[in-house]
Amino acid sequence: MHTILLASGASRKSLAIARSLRTAGYRVAAFFHRKHPFMYSRLFDKTIFLDADRESEEYADYIFRSILMTDADLLIPVDFVDVVAVSRHIDLFDGVAKVASPPYKAIAEVSNKAGLADLIPKLGLTYPRTIKIENENDIDRISLLETPFVIKGISDASKPEYIPSRDLALQVVKKRVPCIIQEFITGDGHGYYTVAVNGMPCMEFMHRRVVELDPIGGPSMMACKFYDPELASLGRRIVEHLEWTGPIMVEFRRESESGDYYVMEINPKFWGSIDLPVSLGYHFPVALAKYYLEGEEAAKRFSRTLNTRRRGCYAWFLDSMRYLVKDPQTWLFMLKYTIKNSRMTDVDLTDPSRLLVHLLVALGRLRVERIRALRLWAKDLPKIYWWLREARKRIREGNLALSLDLDGTLVDLGVDWIMVKRLLIQHGLMRGWSGIMMSLYRLRSKNQKAYWEASKLIEKFEIEAAEKLRPNNLIVQVESLIRELKELGMKVCLVTKQSRRAAELALENLRLKDLFDLVVSRGEENTRRRQLEICLRKT
Image 1: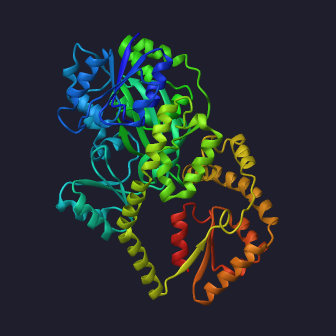
Image 2: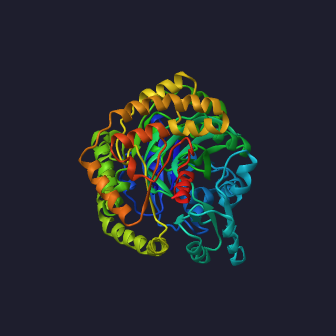
Image 3: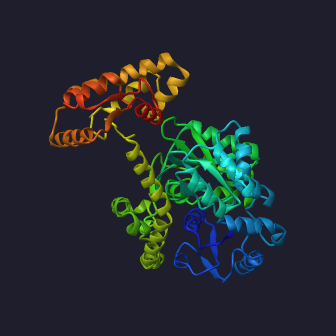
């Protein structure tokens, strides 16, 4: 029986890696560089605790000692700092144990966020417009980008910050040099990950983030299995170019309207959401172990014989306890999911000792998380002041307009979107893994005839729904509020992804049509930003 050492076990990923390896009969040991709840988990056959600084040059020596203490056959570094330490001192482990790590040079290349801005476009993929700020002489280049921004560090611990204006960006950049600044991409986080051999995937998986630690970056708190052949193709292109061997994740953000995938970063390690694929039968850690212990064919053969589930979500409820102090509504959502689907969460009742300690630690951190949340809110005060100054400026100039959406804002239109999607797929106008409005956006830019065919099909359902609308108590209150705003001189416009005919019919049936100065539908523009620009320009 082979023994595999995980370093460090003090990582959210380590339990899923251990759980997966145990299904293949491996003996799993873990080195802990600090005290951690996972030390009490039944999933580790042996744990080693050595108080070590992961940032020190001696850290690799501690891992080496742990290999000797556990008689491990294979070392799997877990976190990025573990991968870096092991790859930089790879010769230290020669003749002692096999090491599941690419060379240090490859690690450094893919984790350099500034370097990705050059690499990704060469591969035909999209990367957010980015400027590397190496010194204060580069700061003026911020004017080349459009607001809002995200400012990140260059290393793995990027600590992203959302910045709404150039003035604030200048202040933040001066404190964070060297760093990179990017245009902010709205949309959901998606991940493509694989264990590959010489650029060829042995096993693949994709996910969509449902809840994130922070909308602009950080680990998933809840993620679901996702499939899109376009995303798979983009991920494979990167892996093939890098000729990668080992685990790797390409993190994407899918722009909310166009559906375009933007590469955000590449992680040369096991990913924080590995619990999700492992819980669905995708045993990436076993494939990696088989490659290093038995060879490429064994890894590929194992991957072909897996019995996997087609769909599923996973929630890190104990990690999400921090939401209890900063966003109770999100925490309640996570709690409800955990109660219904505890098997697909980190609340593992079959691992009671770890679960109890983990829960106590999570509860004990609530005070720390509250202080941290207050500090983050205080840090955001300059952004709030900026928004207030902008609002006051607009009020003084009299340049105010209220824009409202139709479906989901003014009213629930009640369109049978499931039937709409089914018909669009039957007519070959969209794919099952795409959204309706995303598909319309792409058709409009590539095939006008198909776009209008799809738009007309959708419009039929929209008009049927609009014909059934009638005023209710909420609409009466909305009408009263809009009239008060108009008496103050405010212009009101409707911006909607519905067709003009459907939107105007809906307003007429709701007895609101005379209150709107302008209606901007998908017929004029199909992106929200351009619709709002029309609203501001014409009102």
